[in-house]
Image (tube, rainbow, N blue to C red):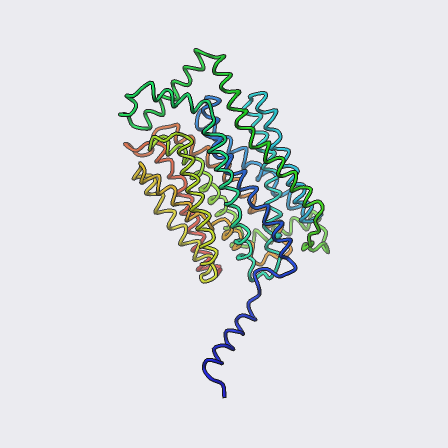
Length: 472
């Protein structure tokens, strides 16, 4: 006769046996190698975000023009995502990783001639080449991780790998703050102007920022030789970290070249034009996937806008320097990193769609605080949105890719291509900042965060549909 305790133990054992492991033993080493790639695009993303503000002052251009940094950066995803998927399907995940690393290193190295010629468009080209490499890496790494084990635990496995992405982001932010923004001669100029005009202490931060920008423009006109020397020094400062990361990526290239990785793609059905057409037809017939691509585009747009313009917010609404504002960006990323591990744990207890809906609702509430409260409290609200964004990308990704089978590489390409949302939306926000405020009495930089607010609403709708309709 069995006791209640024995029966309970048997039930627990049955659950443990029936639930497959997140990562099987044979995939541990390949998983570690591929997971090492995830910090690479985090680093590139977050060392590039501050360049929007830096290039605005270095080249004396508008917020909308400097936002072309993000357009060029994320345009690479739109260009390369589908070709990357076709390349991977024809060859292998390893081949995709090697080509991605090669393009990444090439784009970073192009910062050398770009800085020597002092051409803004040359920097945009370098960033676009670099992100063509990132598109290949993301199109490869995400479905590769999903394929390393049971489909039942695929979302958790991807979330685990994605948890290492913010480590690279923190590294990129640290380098941007300590080796780029704090070393720029243009920031020294702004600081000296503040000291020379003590009356600025009694003015609104947004007014002071405008006066400093005007003073910099006057300096470029009256002292062109000195301004060119300052510009050249700042561009050398900007290029340094990119040349360093090019070396790191080159080392990883040779590590992967010598490593043996399992081929988890089926090559029984070659990817012909008809097969390509049929695959996209199957994918687009799925409402869950179709809506996931849209939600991903809005998520990436929200993320890039919040992290790019936090510097503008800190400088305009609070009165911080660029380097000080970037420190708050690092705090936001620390919160993002901690929240990602916490939410990955929580995901073991609630469904992905439900979690996505809750996180998006938090993003909506905090966006209202960012817009209407302002000052340090508004900045804190903007920082806190990172906690809500922490698990959105991999959760949307996992929901949309569920049950795609051999179509996963092409399905992944569509979701990676959705990252182009990060190219389209920041210039829109930059235009709002350059123009008149959407709400009288509130600085334009604050009301411009109505765009991330709209993005979080779209994501909340997808989370609701995924939970209630798609049952994910």
